[in-house]
Amino acid sequence: MSQRINTKIREASKKAVAVIALFAFALPFAGCAKKEEGAKWKINIPGLDGSLCGAPIYIAYENGYFKEEGFDVTLISADTETRKIGLNNGTIPIVNGDFQFFPSMEEGVNTVVVDKLHDGCIKIVVRPDSEIKSPEDLKNLKIGVDEIGGTPHQVASVWLENAGISARQEDHQVEFLPFADGNLELEALYKGDIDAAAMWDPLASVAEKAGKVKTILNITTDEPFAGKSCCFLYASRKVYEENPEEIAALLRAYRKAQDFINKNPEQAVDIIIKGKYSQIEDRELAVELITSYNYPSYEQRANNEFNVKDDVRYFAQQLYDIGYLKTDADTYTSKYFVEVNVDGGK
Image (cartoon, rainbow, N blue to C red):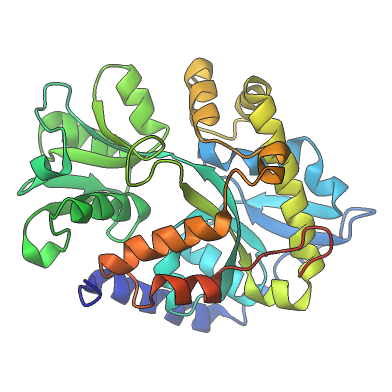
């Protein structure tokens, strides 16, 4: 299995590294405006992508948790490549992201996993009248994704490969079709141009509630993803090694926000909708989703009810088994996961 390398993912990762090298000298000067009075650090954090699952960023910002920890934060829009560049040279100290980052880290993006963010947030959906129920039913069919190598593509690939169906394009057992816009992906599904759609929430859940699709895989509740973190917090290795106190302070702010969301999901949704941080407008559905993502509370952390390192190892193993990683799971985890002392850095 370890020889089954997805060449498109490799090429994309190498291009990302090339871009990082090209712009490494351009970004260090970003964010040099005067810090807010009393702030220890002025930083940029990607937090304007409209996703509901980025809730801890919005809550930490609105509730003042970043400020309490000494940060003057500017929320910015940043695509995947911009995030990688910022992490690589330290101009963006932390981002939330899914295990889509894992291959890029192996290819040279200078970052480490420092915490979990939440569970869930990706579904595979089909038309309401479809007879597709299992990964085996998808053999020889077309699956929509946001991009080849993106997390919905990886989720679908892991699901298929665990059922003995090759997810490699060259084997022609399934065909993945990329759609840059999730609404276009749904339209293709409705028209029959694709047979299933692997999608981020909230689009999939909004369509499901409207009766336009039905879910055949929900990674919050279904194997082999149930109870595992799909999204992690990634810190710039450069910032972590040079100033571990900054990363520790950021994690304290995120954890305050996660605890708040865990205990006050309705209030959190009201803050998010009022601030127009997410594309979702259905308050009831937003509360349902944000609750299902299992943002950890302080009590859950104290009781060791989840283990970030184990989740990193788990997904590293899944990606290694289908050829998306070249490094075995134990070696990968020891190299790219760090346990941060939130009371003092390293």
